Image 1 (tube, rainbow, N blue to C red):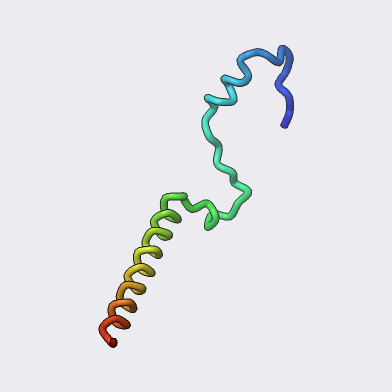
Image 2 (image 1 turned 90 degrees about the horizontal axis):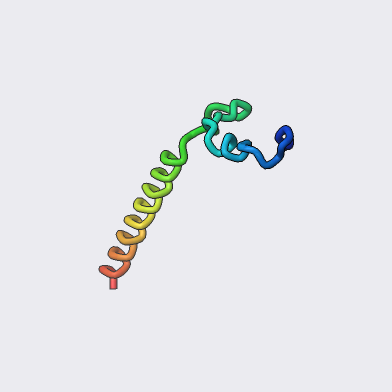
Length: 64
């Protein structure tokens, strides 16, 4: 990281905090998926696995 030009205690920190976010273009497009899509996939996987475990538990309980 480069140091800002003197004076070092200027408004450079404010500029860093308020500049727009730039997307990194060095990553492939398939890796730039949003976190929301990954979060939804993780939640859906948890629901499916939980339902499968509940069905197996019900099946095992009904056997004995």
